[in-house]
Length: 443
Image 1 (cartoon, rainbow, N blue to C red):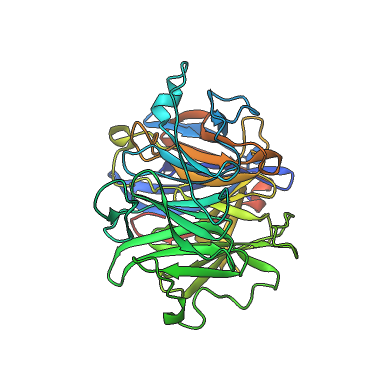
Image 2 (tube, helix red, strand yellow):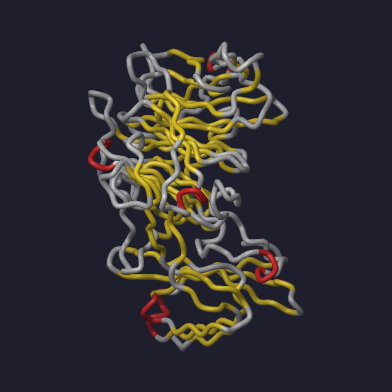
């Protein structure tokens, strides 16, 4: 194969990822003319076989990421210690609110403002609310922010009934809502359910709905704005996929971009998830439960639970004038494994056998995959002082099989100015894969 020598203007950030024992660089680059992007090229290149020269006209681009522990229960080194943060699961925030984190180990939900924690020491006095359940102590897992006017609750203390601000599911089969302290149990399916995740849609033409991953029953339970379960009114095949093997059940669930992503984990006879390489599936459904497509099957999946979509960088805007980009693969779906603690990136713009292309795990500064023991939720910042920067990835975890808890972030580490990009590859370029997309616009 003849040497390749092409020059492009970089139009999208790079992601360094690992595939078996080799390190690759994945880029989305574009040819420009008069400042207009005319054509995109997606490249996946063995890193050792590529020479890259960056220009000086664009902001920094990251290739590797550093883990920063913000709050822990004391077992892990962190900026602050909060004894309530045991077995951290779900994470949610409003446009300017603190992060609400489910503490499955203490039956509470803790509130953390990124600016307050980052200013430590001294650490602030953290707010936590008890989450009621079916028994003495609940085990809150998923949590969602309600931006609609439905899901009205009255806790008997905070005045007249109004829409719940946050809603939490619990492994004991209950769902609780916050309109003020105390929280109120609004669903009690403790006899038939173990809710391991929640998703919500608001402002749609068909109404607002709450979705709960019922790991015990192997279903996705759907509720209207009165917290009435409405599965019987849906299609018989809603939120089902007969191609998924027996033994797997909905584990995590999230509304990303107006569609419902569901992760599946293997469970044993006692109802506990069984970690292991290849143990997992991820599907996408519309809000009525119609299966749209399979995102990922087995492979690197290992009890997947956390999900996050990397926000697109506006290709028509000058990043210098907008804000620095995170460096994560533009528009990628990040899937966090509870089983092995790795975060894998999947490319929605590229498909192999009908599924998203697996771009491999995110790498730390040592060039190895980042591993966060018992990784749970993933979420990008809300671009507020309390919620953190939009290009920072936040996570929760429950190490030692849930005996401890952690809330932290992943931020860009390695960067150079980006602008004119020159790629040179020799014979090893035979491993180079490319997909060309004509026309202007995003990849």
